[in-house]
Image 1 (cartoon, rainbow, N blue to C red):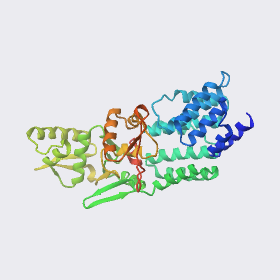
Image 2: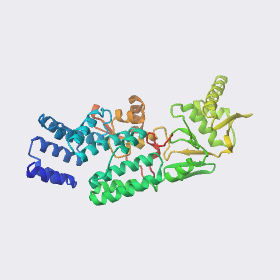
Image 3: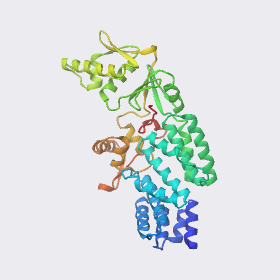
Image 4: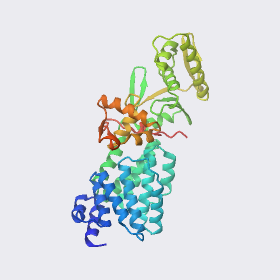
Length: 406
């Protein structure tokens, strides 16, 4: 490694992307291309960074497996920043194995950490937890340790384990201060601030009560029957009944919960679930069918009894009924929560994260764009979507698989 390459690498490690570029900007050898790619990534030019890293990987010879593996890891980090989540993680895992075999432990851990972060973005919390559990963070650089602790904290927050999240954020803050990287310090500060912001709304007869993440966790652990409109399901103690794929049943459950301890008349339930203003006998028959389906699904949590004018919830064990609403209203709340993270998302990545079809995402984005809530950059296949940050509350409960449901 020559002196300019070494100096550029040191500048990148300190977060000085411009200083690194000054040393290698006019060079086209593979090591310089790799460093230029990393510098461009730090400056936010992700498309150019990916191009440079691919050129560098192709330029390394057949006996330079270590250098090629490092380029694969760097490109995977760029892909994560671009929210390109559709590729196979096999090449990243192969690179991690090569790095471990060549005793490059920091880059091998970086590769496995990237895989865990990708799983978090996709809402696959159990797999992300397993990936993080296999990481040995001892001896890591301060900046990499801060990223690892931030990932651990995000996993804990999205599983509503508040105490472990606070501890991980404290460790992340200490590591970020030691690394002296402003971007890391800002990311840790933002994560810590999310603990003090409202994360959901508890609907009350006379209004609503904002709840922080720790208050949401306490409510879910209280044993009350919680109709959770953030995750679209019912929670009672350790029992969880998801209804995200059954929107009619969830609409009925929420309407009954909002009226509890009173009942809801049949016409109101039909209007709520089927969006029909003038019901006839066929709609009343359909309502009976859907109520029967809902009754069967939630029998271990609550009863649903018929009354003279409609239906009423009868929770088991005389539990209190609570409606937990998201901090922002609308069917596209989870989509907006993903877009508000500051990254530019493709429709394919959004569809993967939300476990829905790309066409459904495209229709929702068109409506949101018309309302001025999101904007597009680029054209055709290069088009990406952004939304302004949502101030005043945290969107953690709106992200995919935000709550632990085991």
